[in-house]
Image (tube, rainbow, N blue to C red; front, side, top):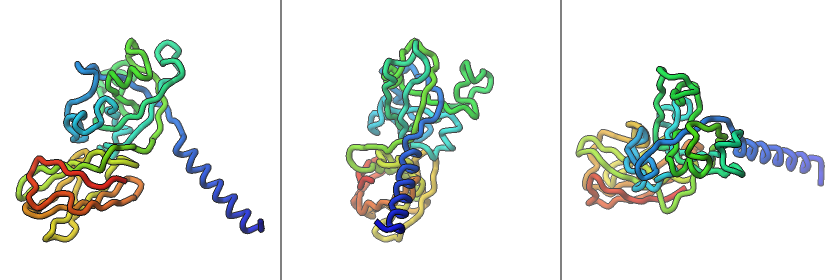
Length: 250
C-alpha cells in the first residue's frame, strides 16, 4: 500500500470512528413518569399526534423539557434511555428503552428543579409513560437519573399523512417517520399545481393556504439530516379531510 492510499484509509477510519462516537455518545438527564389509567400517554400533546396508539407510538413516547423539545422541532425524534447511578431505583443491568418525542413537558418555576420543577430550563428531562418507565426503573421512584442518546427511528410501513382543514386552509399531520424521525421541511403538490412549500403550524402539523380539493396529492418530506423523500400520488383525487394516507419510508 502506498503512502497516499494509507493516508486515505487512515482518514476514512478516523472519520468512521468519529461518526460512530457521535452516534454512541450518552448524555445525562433525568426522567419521571405520567400516571395514566392504561399505563401509557394517549392524550393529544404538543406535537399534534393525538391518540398515540393510533399513531403507533403508544407507551414508547415521552414529553421533553424545553431544552430538548426545541420549540417542537424534535417531535418524532427517537431517543434511547437507560437508568443509571442508582442501585435502589434502576433495574439490574440498566436495560434501555427507545422512545419517540411526542409532547412538551412544561416548566414549573414555582418548584425547585430537584422537586417538581423537573422540566425547568435548562434541565434535560423526559416525562415517560408509566409502562415504559417500569422497563428501566422501579415505579416507587419519583425521579431517576438517566443517560440518553439519539438513535434512528425504526418504523413499520410508510410515513403517514393525515389531512385536515378546509378549501382555503390545508393542513397535514406527518407521523411514522423513520430514520431521523424529525421532519424539518414539507412540500405538497396537487395534479394542477407545482411543488408548494408548507409552513410548520405546530409540532408536526404543516399548513398552506391553497385549495387542493379534487387533486391527487404528492408530498416531499425532508428530515433533520437533510435527507429528502418524495411520495407521489399518495392520495387520490377524491380524498377527504380527516383521512390518513401512507407514503414511502426513509
